[in-house]
Image (cartoon, rainbow, N blue to C red):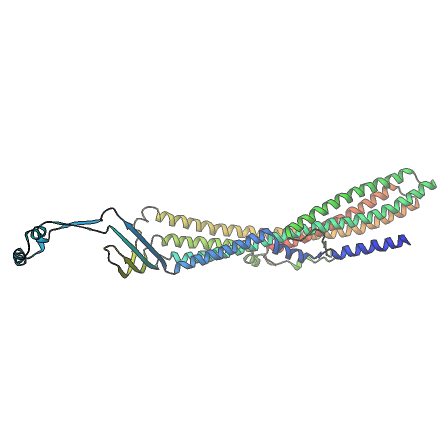
Length: 450
C-alpha cells in the first residue's frame, strides 16, 4: 500500500513539474530572440540615432537665431578729445561776451577742454540669419541624412537575419542533443533486455560469460554518453536562454522532426531576388551616399547667400539706444579651387566610382552566395534522405541479428555492433534534419526571403 502511494505521489510530482515548465516552439524562440537579443537592441539604437541625426540636419533649413550681450568698464574713456570753446564762438558773440563776462570766464572759454567718452557701457542684441543659397549643401546634407537612416534600417535587417540564424542553430543543436538522449533511452532498454537474456543464458550454461561482460561494457559506455549529453543539454540551454532572453533554463522545446518540406518550396530566381537582399540594397545606399558627397564637395566651392534681421541695444554714451536692422551676406570662396577645393571634389568622385564598381562586383558575389546556399540545401536534403534509409536498414539489421543470436547463429559482438549501427543511424538522422533546417534558413536570408 505504501509503495502504491509513493508511486502515485511521484507521478503527480512529475506531472506538476512538467506543467510548470514553459514550452517553446521554434517560432516563439525566434520571436524572443528578435525582441530580447542585445545585438537587436543595439541596432534599434542605431536606427533611432540616425533618425535624430536626420531631424538635426533638417533644422538647418530654419533661421539661425542668436543673442549676444556684453558689458564693460575701462579705467579711462576709450574715446578722448580736446575741444577749445573759443574756436566755436562767432566774433560778434565773442565781442558781446567780452563786455558782459568777467575775466575768469573769458579765460575759461579760451582754454581747451578735455572730453572722455565710453568709459563703461552695455551692449545687447538678437540676430536671425536665414540661409537662402548654400551651394546645395543643406539640401544634399538632408538627403545624405535620409540615406544614413535607410542604411541603419538595412543594418538592423541584417542583424535580425544574423540573430535568427544563431538562434536557430542553438535551437536545433538542443533538439539534436535531446533526440540523442531519447535514442540513449531506447538503447538502454535494448541493452537491459540483452543483459537479462545473457544472464539467463550464462546461468543455464548455454552462453559464455564473455557475452554478459560485453553487454555490461556497452551499458557502461551508454551511461557515459548519457552523462555527456546531459551536460551538453545544460550548456546549450544556458546559451539559448541567454541569447534569446528567456527567463530560465527549465523550458522544453516543441518540435516535429517528422515533417520534412521539399527544398524546391523555397527555390527562387536568383537574379530577381538580388534586389530584395539587404546586402545589395546597402551597396546601393553606399553609391547614393558617395554621389551626394560629390555634390556637397562641389557646394563648398560655390557662393552662399543669407539674409538676416536683428534688434540691438547699447548704452555707450550714457544714453539708452535701441535700433533694428536688416542685412544680407554673400560669401564667395575664391581660393577654394586653388588650395584644395578641386582636389576634394575629384577625390569624392573617385570614391563614388569605387562604390559603383564595388556594387557591381559584390552583386556577382551575392548571386554566387545564393547558388552556394541552394547547393547546401539540396545536399542537406539528400543527406537527410540517406539518413532516413539508413535507419530502416539499421533497424532491419538489428532485428535479424537479434533473431540470429537467439537462434545461436551469431555472436554477441555482432548483435552489439548492430545495436551500435542503429544508434549511429538515429543520431545521423537528427543531425541531418537539423542541418537541413539551418541550410533552409541560410538560403532564405541569402535570397531576401522572410
